[in-house]
Length: 401
Image 1 (cartoon, rainbow, N blue to C red):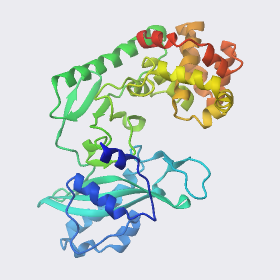
Image 2: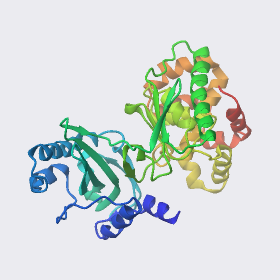
Image 3: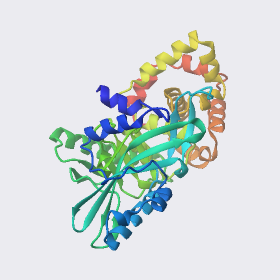
Image 4: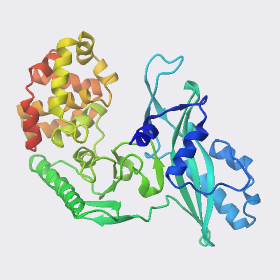
């Protein structure tokens, strides 16, 4: 357990010897075969291709061309939602507080650690992936990634799917899960499938204009943070359960196949809501699920206590800091969900969905807060939180709106 926590949260600067960490990781994962007689620097893909004589490793011209081709294709694939996004960086010298940095292709570095020939017609390339933030003097080890080359058909195989996983398909969801799963696990997958269809039906009863996604949901059941993308032969870190809109895909590292919050993100994925509404909707329609197995009722009680005892915290709730300092924190999820729930109870389902799909969808985070406060007659959000009984979360948890 210590190793998992260490790997997940430890962040490295350039001043730290990263070879020790990589050695531990590769030992844990049964490390790939190192390239013969060479040590490759951590560089960008284009720099690697320009400086590396792959022909010296594999004299066969077809093999060489395919390896170059596969490495070149990685750069475009790394632009996907699997690798792009925001990442928390810690406080360092010259940085006054924790910041959020956007990962872009220019931040991605990698090093080849193995090129393995499984047979005469395929090659698997293993690489370590890094996020590099030069301005902050921080380099983060992201994980171990594999790509394949089909030499016989002259094409790249990416990703390299993990043969330990099986596909289980229901009417609404296709799950990807390890083959040693239990009967209890199958019941959970079926429950998730039914929850999805029942939620869509409930919304359609009150909103004829509701437009759910037509593309079937793909759902990867990972085995903790190490196994989040294990299905893709990518052993990654700093990962979390999430819905990947572009791939119509849920990556689940916590719940074992039934993460209501992420399923709601899929159900509303045809709508581009702002962050405040997007997370509030997912929290509300999942029955108050902010994080898996986290009590929203306890979270709300803690918020009330801090409002009474911490003036700075109360001011943050009442000002725009709610949107900046609390981004993707429980306060934002909970307050958004409760505002939406109160608005639903005030106007009814038909007006609620009509406003949601035709008006609120055009608003920014701040505009959404201002609209809901005005509609509900709220002057200060801190007062709203304190005066809203925690019992409403019990109602949200047991009743589909």
